[in-house]
Amino acid sequence: MVEIKRIMCNPLQENCYVISDESKECVIIDCGVYYQDEKDALIAYIRDKQLTPTHLIATHGHLDHNFGNAFIYKEYGLKVEVCSEDEYLISDLGKQASSLFGMQLEEAQPEVGRWLKDGDTITFGHHELRVIQTPGHTPGSALLYCEAEKTAFTGDTLFRMSIGRTDFDGGSWQQMENSLRNVVGKLPKETIVLSGHGPQSTIADELTYNPYMRG
Ligand SMILES: [Zn+2]
Ligand SMILES: [Zn+2]
Image (cartoon, rainbow, N blue to C red; front, side, top):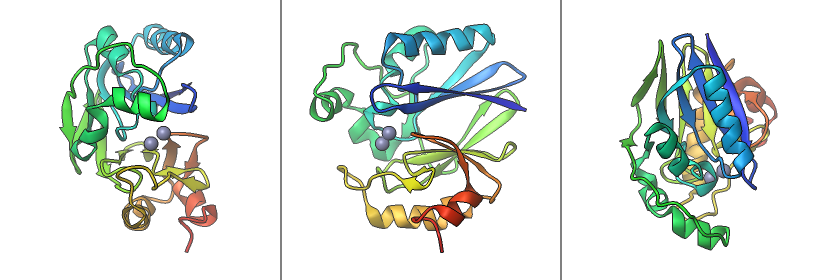
């Protein structure tokens, strides 16, 4: 059994997830915490559940999924793990902040802890998350798949009834189409989809109703 907590973060309403099991180890996925109440909510959840964070993972290098990296490093000593194709994004979060959001990042950003690639596994407690690369939204986009729990954290690749944009720097509609058709769409139908924005879904529902996944 795993427990999954979702905290909606920052002006872009990004979903940060904490997944844990009975071992009390947990993984923090897409830590977009930005406002103080979001940071407080995350810390309180981890403290109240007596969890030990063992990994910080980003589904891709966009700032709204990485606002909290410096905070997590300060609190728990964890550095973000992300696919290397998104190095151009993650290595310059300050630039994303100023060019996309017109804001200044106050803290210095810790370096990346580990470059992920397709097929890597991240272990917490008695569970495993598999890195499955799904380029398109960004070249280094990946989903994290927990096979035992039939759950996929899809980042900004797949949303409920929608998909992520491909018109940002480094995005590719061709890659997105391929990822949706040949990777995401091939997950077991009962897989629960936990997206980077918006409510949860299932692969079965998306294959039926999502105009980008149907047929
Ligand atoms: Zn994104
Ligand atoms: Zn996003």
